[in-house]
Image (tube, helix red, strand yellow):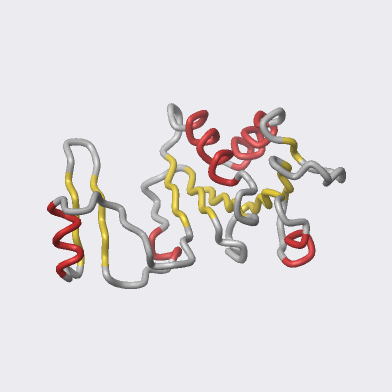
Length: 152
């Protein structure tokens, strides 16, 4: 499985780019998506629905099973290496700047990221001032797709 890391400052365009990559590749590939969230103030369920109530009551693990999907909420810290499995063809991870085993795409918002973090490619989505070598999104989405397909 190929692991692709997309990171950058807030509002740089990461999620939009990843969404379009998944839309493009999901008919042919099984894609796992893992989002790094820097805070615990998150709800994956609608307030006052059954799974929300059980998670808020203190259930250690809560599953939501639908006819086609499984949702899991657990009261434990998980590590990215424990989550990434061989069940997918491609794993896209968002906001894991220092993950070593990935092709790293810096989505440029704050140009200070260029100096702070290692990356393989720079994608310019919302930053109008950066003029060095980079992939311009959305005009060059096909270049990002080609990099991914060449790696798979």
